[in-house]
Length: 126
Image (tube, rainbow, N blue to C red):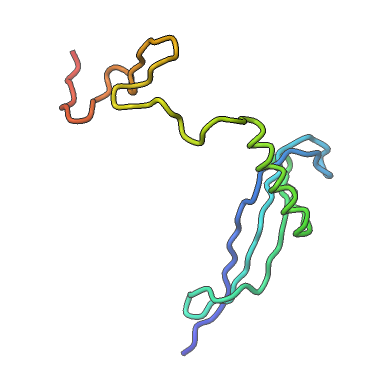
C-alpha cells in the first residue's frame, strides 16, 4: 500500500503597510508564501506549487502577487526595520547578574523587587 498526497505550508515573509485595493484603508498586509509539497508516507519530498499572496489585515481580502513583488516587499520591510533603530545592538548590553547601570551611575536591579532571585528560596508574603 502506497500512501501519497500533498501538504501546504504558509510562511509569513513580511508585514507591510500600504493602501488596500478593496477597502481603501492604509492597513497592514501580510505577505505570505504558500508552498505545496508532494508527500510520500507523510514525508514532504519536493515542491509542486509556490504561490505568493498579500492579505489585508483590515478587510481580509487576499490577492496573489508575483514573486518579484513579494521579494521586494520583504526587502523593504527588512530595510525599514534596520533604519528604525540604526546603531542599536541586537541584544541589550550592560545587563549583568547585579542589574543595569545607567550612564548617570544609578544602579537598577535586573528583576523587580518581590521576584525570587536565582539561588534563593522564594519569600513568603508578609
